[in-house]
Length: 251
Image (cartoon, rainbow, N blue to C red; front, side):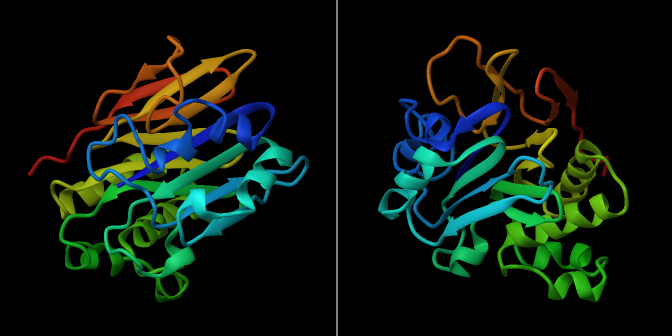
């Protein structure tokens, strides 16, 4: 349904991660190699990034395909960051909410993306939506499943959960409410990355000089890429990656 990528490491220009690699996110928008559902990610894109000494990320999002944005290549050439999260979107309902539905979603220091679909949306998630304060529901950026999933994660983060705990608990809760959902989440606060593999592909690469990259699929054929098993939570820093199994709640 989407492709996404997060990076932590030495300052790097967007184009070095997103455009120049032979199978970077830019190319994945029309020719992904490992996407299991959908073939073209042309329903919006976005990049969120952190500037030095500023914990609140900025975002650049558009409702159309990344290759049709005439300004993106110029931005990607000159904007550098030590941390970013980017995504290209294949919408569950094409055209719904436009730019507002394009990842990354953001609040405070956090950036979030969802690759997948909540089965039975919106009815399946209505009971979970009812657990959120009305104020948080009214602040949803869009009416898509990803926006509500982000609200569920964000509620836990605001309550003090660590990145991995917030993702893991949300995934298992949503999987119980909406079986057969695909819930590959990606989350960062600029200092760490958390991600889930639940129904679609997830890979990572890390090294002292290259930093840490977590992505839906490798952007090149470097042998250092490692695939993450399905039903797994990943938590990464600039130099370390921890993998933990995720389990569905017993019926």
